[in-house]
Length: 68
Image (cartoon, rainbow, N blue to C red; front, side):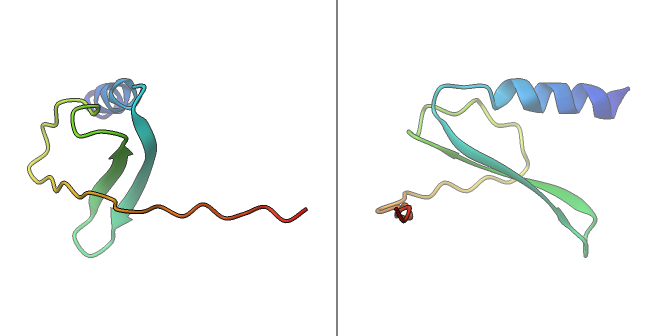
């Protein structure tokens, strides 16, 4: 039951108004699950209980233009 509880908690944390996007990946060398989220502001995201966290500031983010 612990993995299901962790998944539900992770989903609740991502349901915030400031979430840009959320990615999940697997590191096959260390068999670890990685989660990567971007938030619109430094204090928009939930409190993190991970053993490692890095904060970056995006200076510019380009959006592709759809062709007509």
